Image 1 (tube, rainbow, N blue to C red):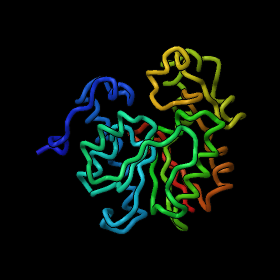
Image 2: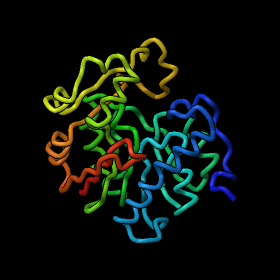
Image 3: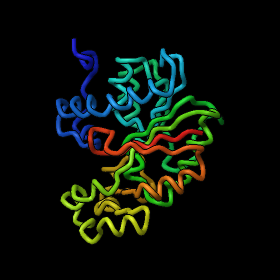
Image 4: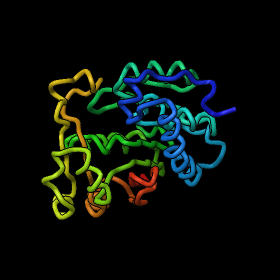
Length: 242
């Protein structure tokens, strides 16, 4: 039996919000992304993973959580700003502790609560003014010695961004290297806020330079490792140790 056989399909709007035009495409993306997340979890936590507190930060409708739960009984917790996404995921994964979070920190978890936190396709959208505050919050709720896995988009994604969003045309890799982080707000964000449930300020498309991430994120975490194109051969995976 397929891993997704027991799950109900999310509605088309929710799937579109995570870049999937159909259930079949959603399943395909889930399998691609979850493989690397699961393998990396097993690098840093002893089995069984179900014995650990693991947070899916920005879980959405479970593009990672649904398959990961079937495979290894993780994550234990999830949070997202979209209440409809949390409602759907709660129906599919009733044993996972889910919470609707605010767009800006803090979270309600106590300090040092989690063994590991992963966040896929969130820092690729956050505006610069929210990047470090959320990293500080991730650091706060991680236990000493804990690990955070965060995906980013780097210079290798520039050609794709230019094809998909006209506003990226004015930027090149030299701009990214000079600035460290580049952000383009989605053009219709202010006109169609209903398309971005839970967003209360700016939101768009973000790119990071590796040296910038190592330098700035390294001010918070004891070690910063970057694995290029580790997530579905597209996004880069940043591994942070507290």
